[in-house]
Image (cartoon, rainbow, N blue to C red):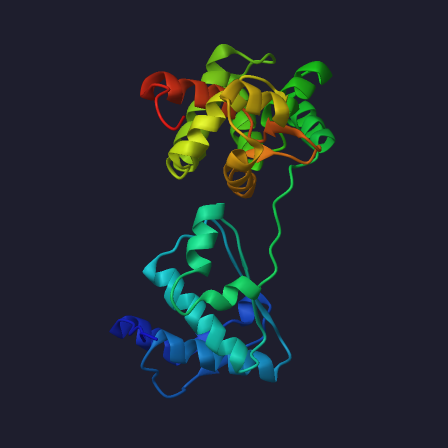
Length: 270
């Protein structure tokens, strides 16, 4: 594993570390200089272990970057030393999969996985109604638009607040679509295979669709759709929880796909 070396200022800071103000009750001062961030982390973890404390690290929107791989390797070493450190990472399916399959990081495959579930519609509706002062009907419509998707919930609330209006305007919807497209959907779309995109062009025609109907309009067989179906589910794009039926899982993704296919053309995998 590559050992990272901090700057001189960083090394000086690591000679005196006081975490008491954060409620940890840990003060390390006057210790010998450390030669790397990794060595400093090991010292900190050793002190936490002595005091019976535990450390939880949370990382959102994880990417398979050099720094992330270095950290995961160091985390693995600390776990092997029985240090009280725990890790929660969140990210898109492809990013998590890429990190899991990186060299020397396959131990992540043994970690527990949790699929993020949609937020509760009732709670979203109540929050919109209370915070934005909109009617129950408008709050219900807004909650439905988010699909329980956390980013959509935040973005829609933000744009409604900024609009100062009590009704959903075309401008608010356009801003929501733009935010979803730029921040999330363009990346998801870029990581779909040509075959997966081709199937999505048919799936978005309806709110939900029997698999038998999809196979009929595409002229494909069940075994031909099985792999893209599996991948689209894993990537969080479609919902197949209802037996024999598929639907688009992401809010306003149907509108996004329609726009993408319009600009890109519908050529591709037949």
